[in-house]
Image (cartoon, rainbow, N blue to C red; front, side, top):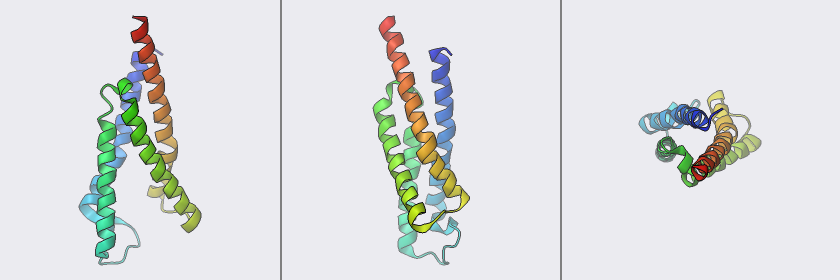
Length: 139
């Protein structure tokens, strides 16, 4: 595959993956912890406040990943930092699985994104960056 085609495919994959944190983060900011199954009604203010805060962080992480799409080959440091943030969150979610048990399917999907998809995208970004540097060096 040509480096330009691989770069474009990575950009498409990142764009699609960004939909999850952007949509989920925005939903959490707007609806708060009430969107969680099993949450008592009314939701305790401290729980709602913390949930909306974390949803805002989730939203901005998605937008920050989206900001890497253009020029992805040169956004390695930002992409790795964002990826490390997501991996840390995924590790915390995995700890929750071990401590409290398996969450519902949407949270399992999140775990797969955090500990599966994001690391693969990070490796792919590094490959595209290396290819880009090689092409520029050869030119």
